[in-house]
Length: 231
Image (tube, rainbow, N blue to C red):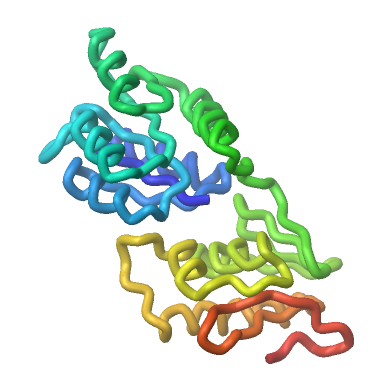
């Protein structure tokens, strides 16, 4: 699952992004309201964490414009203000929750899980298992039997997108968004490089699974039976 964090304070944004990544989320960050609104409008995010005090466009304005544009992504507002009116305005504008600074990271993670559950989204998993392979998103460890290899961040996001729908074709655009988000250019060539590297890692652990390209549609991960995992 992908989270958008809109926070201009580097000392706040970097630890939060790291904690969210460790919890199993893919995280994109924006440092101002204009960029945050641009990314939020892509529809690529399962949830948005949005600071109220932002340069360019304040968080309440970002939220209001998101909702007017039809976005129903859950939003958690972050505020350093003690004025209850800001919280009321945020909830009235369509926020799902708010958290006043300073706060504990564990509380933020719990609130993220809560808003995702209310929207019917699954919690990030500690381990994905399918087709004879096991993958731990937090450590990016891919294993089969006694063999283990560490994936790069992009390889891990591609694998996670495919394992969550093992045996089914995942559209190319969905795989690219899972790995790069909406803010980067993910050409066919760049995606194919990551898929090729992932195939090599699957072979390295002797996985009875392969990633197959489905022409004109996307990719799927499937069992190889007695095959060696190569295309």
